[in-house]
Image 1 (cartoon, helix red, strand yellow):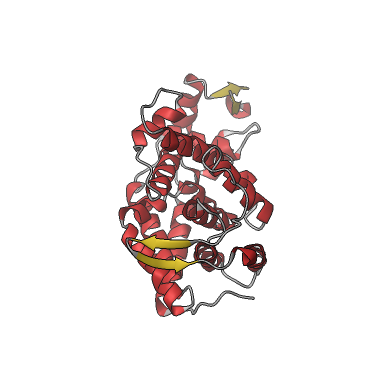
Image 2 (image 1 turned 120 degrees about the vertical axis):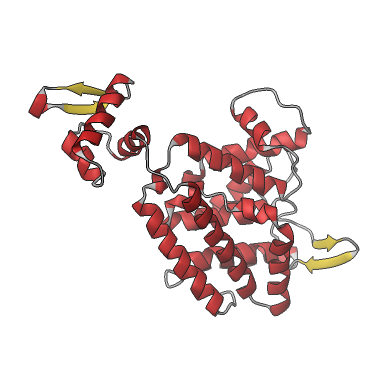
Length: 317
């Protein structure tokens, strides 16, 4: 059964704005950002999604862990980061419609943190804020059935991916299928669903904006539960995604350097190529700029040059 929600004016507005910004990002090749920027954004994603759950490690400490440097901090926090790094590094291997992959991801995220990682809960749970019970999750006996229905919903091709990702995130939080790790799984799986149609989301740390105002995140979840439909949460998440795309465009509103162009081109072209091929890929650059890019790449041993004059070709070094 399709989870309940309504298409509001806010939702239509954000979908339109998001679509325009994704188009602009694709046109500027930002979808193929350099490896350093990808690494930075992945660190931001992991830092933000774990900080929402109380992890105390900084971005600098997470970077140190990636570089195999010694980090002083709570053992639990370090384990959470190591687990998350493993999952996000291999996120492309996970299939958003596959419930077994969902359980596998949870097992990896919560490895050595809880005894029943990768398994749905076998007891009743509630979420308490202060002295108030905010949410009583459905009985544990219903979890397998409810989650199976949610994954069936993901297969509905008549639904927009942007909306499906938000609905799944909310409904999963409502079902609360695990004893721990529900929040980070909701955010991870929304990213994975979005990546189906928009690969840029692999490197877009929208979790940062959630972490900066967690109260609004939990308020949107609470409002949707009170109304019995995910409309408010969809509006909230689409706003977060829209703002994240805006930040990416603002921070990347610069001309690509020669090294960045070469990196982007080589990611798409692993075979031999000519200067003409390079210029056809970057139609906005002049022949002089193309020659300079290629010459510098040869000097830096990024690419290899062979042939002479009109027969000159290049390949990855």
